[in-house]
Image (tube, rainbow, N blue to C red):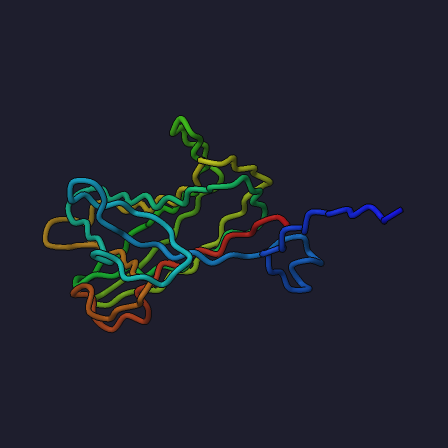
Length: 196
């Protein structure tokens, strides 16, 4: 009597890549770059990408008005974030000013309801130059469902007539984006702690 053939499904390969420190701590950091791109009827959207692409514009300025830019990272699969979220961003001006800038992280559900995760402020002084800022957010355990977003909100006060605040965000790190001279880096970099 011949032996019965049994065919077992081949398991799908694991595409995740972790180092020993990630496994030991249970957290892996993923780097995202803030950028603007054109969508719809020639309107700008502010998003995060894992790739160092070219931004459409790469900077935004505000003068005698409150400024706010919201960068969104949309999750296609559920995941959990916990720990220190780290941010680098350049801000500058052709004029001299000292202003308090505010940075806020939100969890945005599928109904577009924002829940604040953490916020911080930084008093920044520029004088025809720019500053490279390093910001830390402390985020408790937060589960994101598919379709939900992590939102970074950059907020600046009105600096007055004849003055401007420039936020820089070009993944390609171009040096010709704005009138702000002598900047170190034009990338907006977000390091996100993801639970393994």
